[in-house]
Image (tube, rainbow, N blue to C red):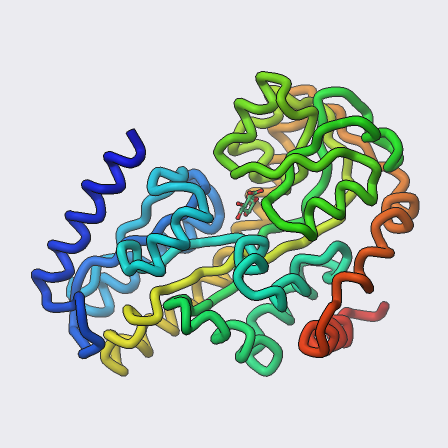
Length: 335
Ligand code: GCU
């Protein structure tokens, strides 16, 4: 079903861009339809912020550029969509830092446990060109440009059985993680059994008992309805991974300088909007969790830190990573 949908989509996308002369070369064009894939709901803070950007682009270019947002993973899981973007079938996508770590290991630094103290610290780093410029351009050869980073909030553990107070409480439990070595190792350090799978598969896997738990932020836990099937939430706050807006490099080159400036301005605004919406939506998610009778636990934070910390140093396997890590920690407030 999805393959069918994608083939039809690729055809329509090719025809619509060819019609305005945009496909095939790197000459600038002054309009067209762009497609953005995101695996979140239409109400998610990132989707809402990007919707604002889409409206802004349409208005500011007098309707020359249209940005169509495809939520809910309808165009495929993040990993598949990266391939579509590389092939210039989809022009923009939101992908988690974990996915980019698989393309360039240096992205791992921002995906490590405890690398950011909080969302403010994360935001000071991940959109700071002095720190990120060469990292974000490093995938150009794959036709990928990272143009903005949004917060994906603080991630914590949630399980069907609970409560989880210490790392040994998840011993023997299969915990879903995003598909990277960093995530696998992190759950092993906590004494659980990591099970990689894509986001859209988690609800059914929890329901079927294929996994015993997962880790994510409150917004995803509520909007993906995982709380219906895993009612124990434990505030481990072990990760604050950014989500990135990636754009086809060829597409970026097709913007006229004037339109690129408008795009960049709207991009910066979308980042600000997302952080504000993030905080509001997290509070709303918390209320839903409480009303649904989720058991919310403040576990032994030190015990989790002690279990996970050894992997941080081992994960910094190059000079570039170490340098990024040091610059990131230098911007941490007061610690
Ligand atoms: C968060 C994050 C997504 C990611 C998802 C996951 O929702 O924002 O980018 O795909 O977690 O755990 O897969």
